[in-house]
Image 1 (cartoon, rainbow, N blue to C red):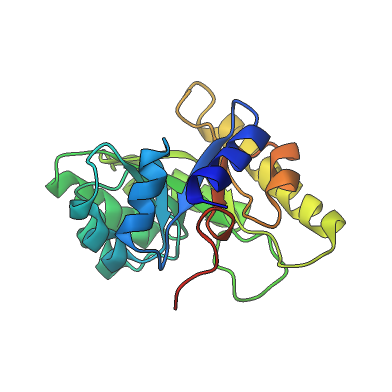
Image 2: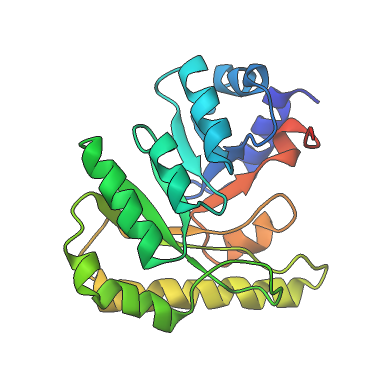
Length: 222
């Protein structure tokens, strides 16, 4: 199957309100261009230096999403062009994104990452920690970031009931934050969850952004 055929396969499976992020980590620029030529415009990277290297070599109307764990010292590399940062897990990181966005005279959209998996290695906030960020004086002064939703990764398991529970938990976090902090903001609408193995469960649980890499581009090149 070609990249175009793989893309079409996923696009046919997605309801209208769900957006496909084509995950290009470890993939060459040629593969991304092929997906672009097939009509894909939203791409996700998990390494800032890789995203910064690929950006100038590809069409300017690509919407770049940063989907990995972002270190504060790497924000500067992508701040001039990144559209959405999926995995903000601290006030410190949010402050750095705000600072770098201000230096580039732009506003960067961000999602708060929640820890919903049973695995210890996953990053993310609890609902209490998210509330602490959103009620802080520091956050209230940030003019160059916009929190547009939440993100989470389920446990890597074959137990679909567990994955469903974890995605439902993220949906609850989204609704709580929406009603407490963003009741009248239409921009707070994204629920980023679901990857190649579990995207169909995520869609049923209300996902608006799914991240597919291997299913479109094949196995990763390490």
